[in-house]
Image 1 (cartoon, helix red, strand yellow):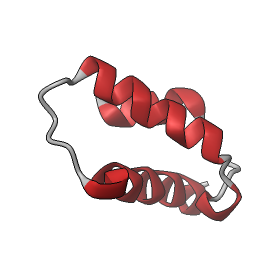
Image 2: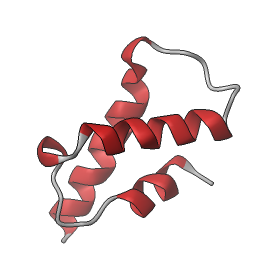
Image 3: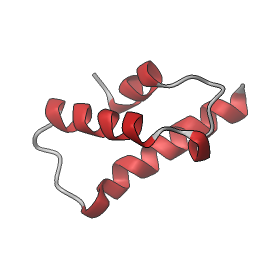
Image 4: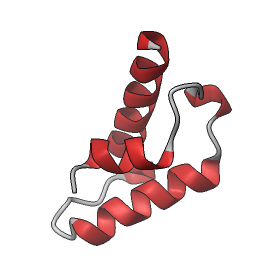
Length: 63
């Protein structure tokens, strides 16, 4: 599965990133890393957090 599909599966269009549960975010990152073991390690998983924030806020603004 793609990263955006994982995000869409675990979020709704009503939620904003600032109100997004950190446990759900950690679960999304964990699931992505499990499915993609060759993804390079990054400090604080910043690329994944950035993509989650971007996807959630874009979905919210389109709604």
